[in-house]
Length: 106
Length: 106
DNA sequence: TATATTTGCAACCATATAGTTGCGCAACTA
DNA sequence: TAGTTGCGCAACTATATGGTTGCAAATATA
Image (cartoon, rainbow over all chains, first blue to last red; front, side, top):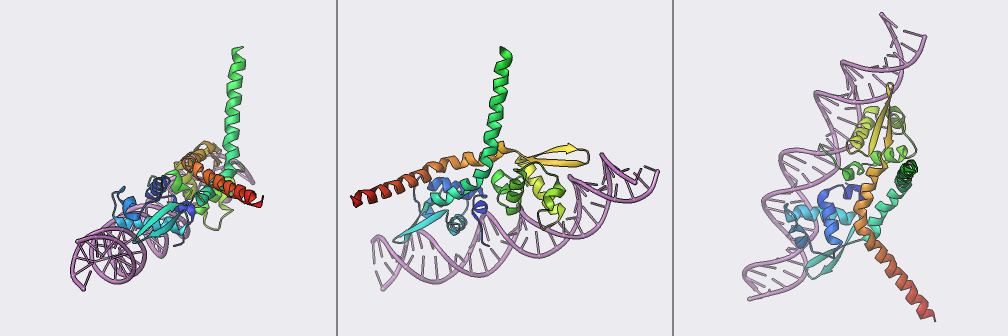
């Protein structure tokens, strides 16, 4: 039942919601308009994102505005950190290949 | 059946496998030893990671070595890119707050 | 006050997922 | 050649997941 950030961003709809909210806060109805499924289905996705603190809510009368929590998004980046060196090394190796090609041209 | 990278990294076991392989190539048996579930269960996870090209295989006799594909890992980083500005702005705002505190101290 | 709008919550359903066991095949080894 | 080892594939199972419909609470509007 309890989901983590990685499970939260596994769903394409939820990723799309996050992208939507990166532009600014929105109400559930406004978000749901962007998708084919029902408001309740979208609302469930929002609830999951809120559970993981990827989005936060702010009440305004009977409307509820949901907005992104970039700090939590950053946690995904933190996990990726341990792999960054690897793909940077890969680039370095590519540089080396390109360098060798240049050497060969001489 | 066809899964994308985000669904692949949603599972904790699969994330652990990726971390394991970041240290170097391993055989399915060697990987499975690090987990409580059966070899076949772990093998399924490896297969999913291979399907998404997050890992690649190299046969050596009857053994198969799986290794990380950092280039594919980078695709997750690419998606995160669109949010990075947001949490950087957040830091800038924090900087501003700290700056204001300093100003107040004067 | 009566009515409409915005939202959350609960029950239910079909399918996807992660796990298991069992089996077969290829490749080392005695 | 016979036996062992490493691995993938298939069938099956329990549970998680994403979707639906229906309803109730709270706020806005006539």
